[in-house]
Image (cartoon, rainbow, N blue to C red):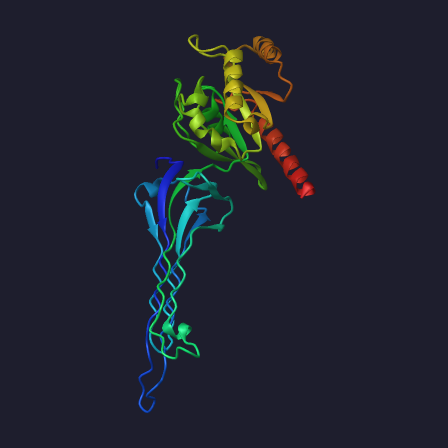
Length: 344
């Protein structure tokens, strides 16, 4: 299935039912008075977060969602039936905004969470409501109000604990294949990944986390070049970024340090929050160098970048060093969760 992370949808709440004009017409009761009932409220439109939907592609083919109109009032003071609400399933991590104003309406991050996006119209009043001491037989009823109509922009931000960051061909897809059951395409050329991939990493029977692989970031991405920045928003919810670097790039590509600095520059232009997230340096493809040469080469990269954070050396293609990395990530995430729980 093609991954779609943005969609436009029109939502139309139901109009309120009209009130009715009616009078009692019963034998032996010549002046029965008004008995026109109120209309029913219009149905509202809600978005609901569900687990079994992971893309917004359905909105490409079903772009209008309507709730039911309220029923008109009836005689004998019978109120019209309320219109049925419309519940629209969306993936976890869907952010909702109004297209015309850009106003953020809400964010759906928990299973079963609902968001009212179009409120149904209010019911009209029957003529019974207008009866008074000076008007015993009112010939007046009100119409129901119109339901809200809106055009919404839905944006999907994947919910993952760890995000992979790097230039094309840095080995992100190979890493996620190595440590999880996800099967992104892997090949020896750039731009292999065209859409995000999620993988669940189980370090033991009771401990696991979710890792996200996005398309590689290239220079100029903050201005719209390439695919990476289109998906960087998917890293906004992560607790940790893994910055992968190919220690032995192709001759036509940037040196490892140049590639790393370009990534750092691009995410800084994109978002201060993203740039300030915890980020670990992952030196990948060390299997391409002899052990002694690999150690010296990696240290040179670390020194030139003046990197102060954690560093891991791995070979994603054969799993070398990945087990220790996954356990370190799990411990880090658990520490984050404990600190968050204590602060709350």
